[in-house]
Length: 125
Image (cartoon, rainbow, N blue to C red; front, side, top):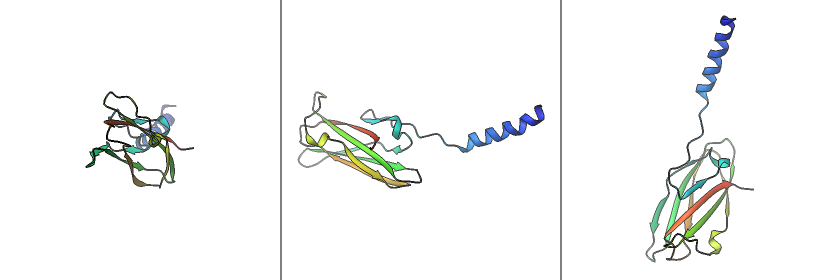
């Protein structure tokens, strides 16, 4: 009985070692990664201010899958008190990430009043 169990146990351990777990979500609290997209890899956001004071955010997303991946991105711009700024630019944007590529997601603040942001990534429908 034990002799038959050992090869099965070794096979199970070997298969478990071959599978890679999904990458952890990023540590930046401004990026909200839903469970549906945790198999993607996200870089830390790069935030720059333009000459007019408007913020620009760039996030690189890696699609490790063998097929294209539908992604829904919503960027909420926040004022100096942390309240959302009402703007049409906060509507969701839908992108299709090409398979096994890095895609840069860019978002521009609607006005210089925006001091921070919150970017939510979810599966696109």
